[in-house]
Each structure stands twice: as C-alpha cells, then as structure tokens.
Image (cartoon, rainbow, N blue to C red; front, side):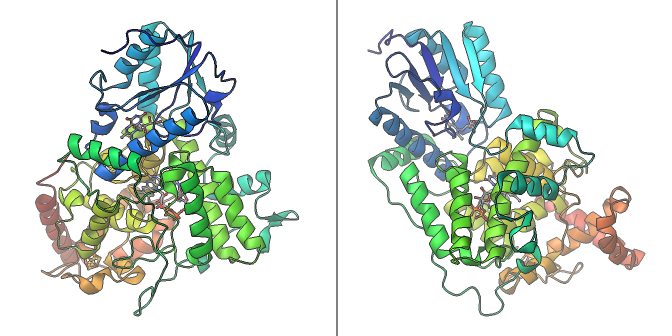
Length: 522
Ligand code: FAD
Ligand code: DLZ
Ligand code: SF4
C-alpha cells in the first residue's frame, strides 16, 4: 500500500526533466535535513504530441540517473516513475499528490523551459494554496532581464549584434579590444561541401552503452508507447553528467577542427559529420554551455583547432542558443500564434515515416527515425525548407519537430522552427525567409544523385518538388517580400520567368500541395 504521508518537507524542490543539475538556482539554500526533491515522469509530457520513442527513453533515463546522483549525495528524492500505479499522469495532479504527502511550506522550481509547463505549475500551486518560488535559470549565460534590456534598447534585433556584445562582455575570443583573429565572423570559410569523393572517414560521436537504468527506461517506453514514431535500436546518447563531459571531450578531440569548414554540408549515411551532438546534454542541463565554450576556446589557444571552427562553434552556443532563448521569453505567449505568411496546410504524413520519393527528405527523416537527430542544415534547408515552401502551418511544423527530435524543448524548438525556418514570425529571428530551390540541396550534398527528381527542373514529371515549390513560393509571396532588400536577387530571377512558365509552375505546385497534404499524422 502507498504511504499516505512521507516525512514533512520544509521546501519541496521540483526538478523537471530538462533541469538535471543540482547547482541550479532551485537548490540554493537546500537543507539536506529538512528539504526534499520532487521529480515526476508524467504521461502528459509524453503524449501532448506523440513523441519519438528515443526522445522519451532519453528523458526517462537521464531523469532516473539524476535521481541516483542526488540520492548518492544524500538528498531526499520523491520520484514518480511513469508506470507507478499511483502516478496520476500530469504535473498538476502529481504535484497535488506529493504536496499532500510532504506538506511543504514552499515549492521551489527553476524557471521551466516551456511556457505551457510554467503556467501549469503556477496554476497547480495556486489551487493547492501553496507558496511557489520560481527562480531564474542560471544555466544560460544571458539572463532574461539582461536580454530584455538589450532588446528594448534596439529597433531591430539581430543575432550578430547580440553575439558581439556577448563576446565582448564575457571576454570570449577577444584580443585587446577586438575579436581574436581580427574578424567577428568566418561564415565565408564555413560553407564547403564534400565534393564527389564524399566526406571520407569521420570518427562518429562517442557511443554510450546501456546500463540497467537506461535498459529499464527503454523497457518502459517499449511497453507504454508501442505505436509511437521512431526506433529505439540505436539508442546511445549520453545520459549522465560524466558521459556528457566525455561526449564533449570526444567532439573537441575528433571533430571540432573541421566543424566550421563543413558545418553546412550534407552527406548520405553520415548523420553527424563534424557536428557535436551535444544539444541533448546541453538542453537537459547535464552539460554547462560555459564548459563547452571553454573547451573549444582552449583547443584554439593550444593550436588544436583553427579559428573558423572554434568561432563557428562558439557562435552557435554563445550566440544562437542564447539569442533564441531570449526571443522565446521576450515574445511568448503571442509568439506561438504568429503566422506571417498565412500558411495553412497540415504537415504531410511522410515527414514522420520518410515514405516519399524525394531522396533528401527520405534520408533526413530516415535518420530522424533512427537517431531522433538531424543536423542544422538538414533541419533548416531540407525539412524546414520543404514545409515552408509547401505552406504548412508554422505551429504544426513546431509540433512535428517536438515529436521527432530528442533535443527539442519548447524554448529552443519554437523560435528556430516557427521563426528561423518558417518565417512565421515575419522576421524576428531571421531577417528573411530561408527560401531555396533543389539546386541549393544539390550543391550542399549528394542527395540529388540518388533521387528520381531533377533538382534543376521546376515543371515536368521529373521536376524537383523543392524547385517547383520554390518558384511558386516566391510568386505567391512576391508582394509581401518585395520590400525586403535581401530578397532582391531572388525576386529579380523570378521576374525573368514569363507568365506561361509561372502558370505551369503554379499548376504543378497546386497538385503537389493537394497530394502531399491529404494525409497527416498529427
Ligand atoms: P552543433 O552543430 O554541433 O552545434 C553546437 C551547439 O550549438 C548545439 O548543440 C546547440 O546547442 C547550439 N546551437 C546551434 N544552433 C542553434 C540554434 N539555432 N538554436 C539553439 N542552439 C543552437 N536545437 C536544439 O537544441 N533543439 C531544437 O529543438 C532545435 N530545433 C531546431 C529547429 C530548426 C528548424 C533549426 C534550423 C534549428 C534547430 N536547432 C535546435 C538548432 C540546431 O540545429 C541544433 O541545436 C543542432 O543541430 C543540434 O546538433 P548538434 O548538437 O550536433 O549541434
Ligand atoms: C519531454 C519530457 C518528457 C517526455 N517527459 C517528461 C516528464 O515525464 N517529466 C518532466 O518533468 N519533464 C518531461 N519532459 C520535459 C517537459 O516536456 C518540458 O520540456 C520541461 O518540463 C520544460 O522545462
Ligand atoms: Fe531533394 Fe529535389 Fe534533390 Fe530530389 S532532386 S534530392 S527532391 S532536392
């Protein structure tokens, strides 16, 4: 029988699945004798979108390992496993159950990474009539007040300005008064493809075998979510702090040096190339972003990695990651509703199954099914691009993203997907729509070699759907994007096409839209 009461807790520190660090602010002043920790596996978080089974196993395994880390340090942890018969399946009811058992004077939590979850916890605490303290999240280098002050002082918010300010104020890759090496940005060195010989041998990210805890988490997922998308066979993510540091070392030693040069390249059968695969451990807070930045800068100073790679990596973590999070909290909750291009189609079912003749989409989704991972250019310039060109509702693209990627948390997925990749925010995160035809994909990888479509053709039976939809996208949104100077080149090329060709493209695009949006999984 379940115990009606547990030992009373002065403070009950609530730790969510992506807050796995006991140096987080919620632990400040933690008293081993009188305080306790509460962690809840809840069905609601696993089902509000049907999620990839590898993503679920990752969260449950990492949470259960963190529970052991805390207990080893002598902290009292109340932990609700998903299959506990008394588990009520959602944060509000579980909080009520545990607050009743432990009768805390106060609940303490680090600010959640999801607006929806924060609202739920606040509402639950109110209805319990229990004090709740939400503390700032120190995992990030830029706190939300600093970001708001920065944003309010500017007419337009661009990554570049924010990133330079972060470099300067934190003294990262700064020599004297300016950037190390004399340039802030090495993007022009960082767009190489692999050419006809392909990428050659690249050491894959370090693989982590299953211990009993991971095996049990995988069993839970297998039992509870047999029909969810995604495979579990290749699960090898780091799930503890030590493993996160081992994964960081492995990246620094084996892939950082070429990270920059090939960061935009794609190659069949190479899911990771020179990427770090650190997003999951960063987002679960098993790895501190300062440690990742320091390790890369040390490699540069020791001559082990060139500046274009180290600056590129630092830009992703100190720049993009912080910027994206700042935008999320600055703009929520309205941000989620934005749909600047009035896109209204559902996400096609093949984005979950990979069952399409478009080789680039089939390969990228196949990789998602196997690893719950795609690298940045696959996300932005294959899968995201396709959804934007087709005209899928931006929030639906985000929901799909949350369901298929192991590293997706609302704060990071929403601005990247709705903003950067779909231009749903009308230019808050990026300054123009990332629109491109099949020719871009052909230039940056080898997918087109194995495809039945012709990347150059916009009409005809073998026309590449990206290319058809690209011209149709420019044509449909011509008026809206004309004022954007950065779209000038693309629109001038569109203007060169005669009306007959534009009409034929439009007709084929209508057919693609009708065929592809007829079935959706969500
Ligand atoms: P690397 O290429 O090795 O980059 C290093 C680190 O930089 C990443 O681990 C990540 O922490 C950070 N980073 C790089 N770009 C971004 C960015 N735009 N925003 C935030 N952090 C960044 N990242 C997520 O962590 N979760 C998401 O849900 C997510 N959704 C995305 C959706 C779209 C449409 C796009 C275009 C990007 C998204 N990103 C997301 C950013 C980026 O693509 C992933 O962080 C990266 O691919 C993860 O692989 P990696 O760890 O090998 O990254
Ligand atoms: C993604 C996820 C999943 C699948 N399961 C849980 C869970 O059972 N318990 C939990 O605390 N968090 C989970 N998460 C993460 C949440 O969906 C959400 O991203 C975070 O609570 C935001 O801080
Ligand atoms: Fe993708 Fe078009 Fe290339 Fe086929 S031809 S792989 S659909 S870009």
